[in-house]
Image: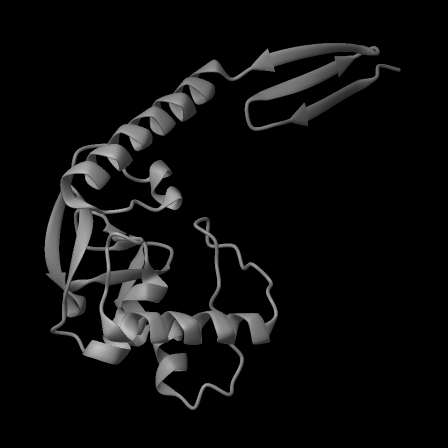
Length: 180
């Protein structure tokens, strides 16, 4: 009877055949990651130098091409709601929670892959309340800018956009970094 075991990892997969380990590296994926990080570092530095804008770390996987710094009304921004569907900011769970009495559960913290990140309700409420208070005075892209795709779908900054929409309304213009 043969003994074969396969383990997949992000940058390689390992095949165990009769007790011997054979490693297959995914060089193209590794090169892509290196390219994305180098491009992100250059883009981050250029935005900081030229526009005093801080690019969030989460954007490095998504901003692969040229970008532009533009002002956009909050009502023109879209949020990914489900697979291949977008919605406006007032339709999101975050905004609905902000408009409510805020006593209910906040179940809207997801990572970029759309997987729920469990966090205590108390921490979520406190973090969102702090965000609303910090954005009440003004939106400062030098701290962390909202990044969007070509069609104004938010890549990173949905919570900031919802807090700004709640405080300032849909006609409020924000500086965003958008793909070209």
